[in-house]
Amino acid sequence: MEGMMNGNDHYADANPLGGNKSLHKLQQRYRYLLDKTTPHTVGRWVAWALLLVIYGLRTWYLKGFYIVTYALGIYNLNLLLGFLTPQVDPELEGPTLPSKGQDEFRPFVRRLPEFKFWYSSFKAVLIGFLITFFPIFDVPVFWPILLMYWMVLLFVTMKRQIKHMIKYRYIPFSLGKKSYKGGKGGPKSGKGPGSDK
Image (cartoon, rainbow, N blue to C red; front, side, top):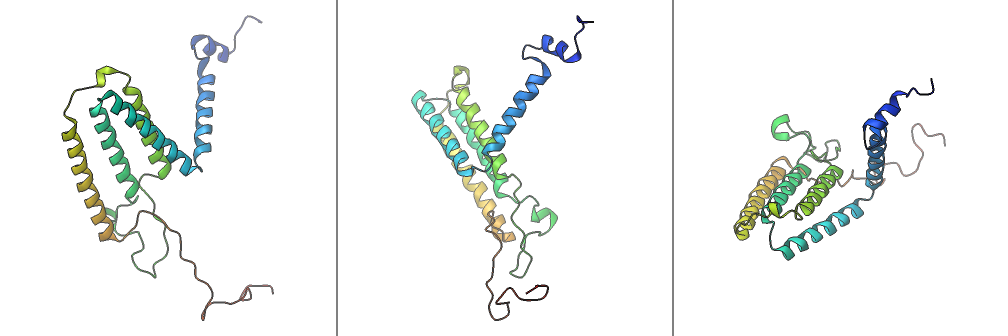
């Protein structure tokens, strides 16, 4: 029975990448490297900014790919809106964010978390950069009109978002719960009910 192959060997021969096992290992490795970048927020955004500068320099040098840049701008604006919007919209679900000083502290939960925002935007800029190597995507357009239209869209969208923030009294950044030091009404030492001292 030495000539018999087990099930895994069969997949290794059929797939040039070495079968589902090697593809799975490659995906695991990619996820591992991606997970290692999660706590490095500043580094991730610096890498994104560098990629965006490289993309901008390439499009400026080529003097083209304005439609790709416009699509990239619209996509990133959409991601920014998801980042600034609460997960539960108070307009539809009712107010869930604390609106008074005595309400319980609840941190701001975004519709689109920061890491997903960065990851989606980074992928989009990278894909946009790779597209600049294919002249078929360089559609000739009058770019000032696209820029003006994008700026109007940005202004109108941000104005609406800021009005929404003011109406429902939320800030899209969680600054943490206020901590108070012991004063007149608070305990001055660690002694109190439940303490063993």
